[in-house]
Amino acid sequence: MTARVHDCVGALIVHDGKVLLGRRSADREWLPGAWDVFGGHVEAGESGPQALCRELDEELGIVPTRIEYLASPRRHRA
Image 1 (cartoon, rainbow, N blue to C red):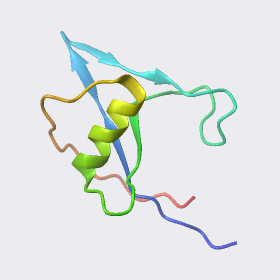
Image 2 (cartoon, rainbow, N blue to C red; image 1 turned 45 degrees about the vertical axis):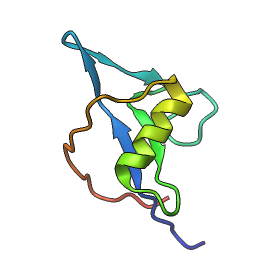
Image 3 (tube, one colour; image 1 turned 90 degrees about the vertical axis):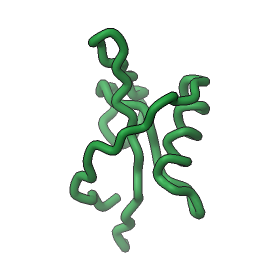
């Protein structure tokens, strides 16, 4: 099987000194039941900020008012 690499985005949402996390579904293949930031895969033709805005709208129904780039972790193979 050929390993695939996915570009992903994630949002660290902070308000009044509190961080918002979501709990992954127990039936997920990757880190089931874990607490995680909101985000997902970058679709073909999307920039990172575009993907992040789309994911936050899909998952939470919100539009970010500020996006600040923090880091690019090492790529993981799927």
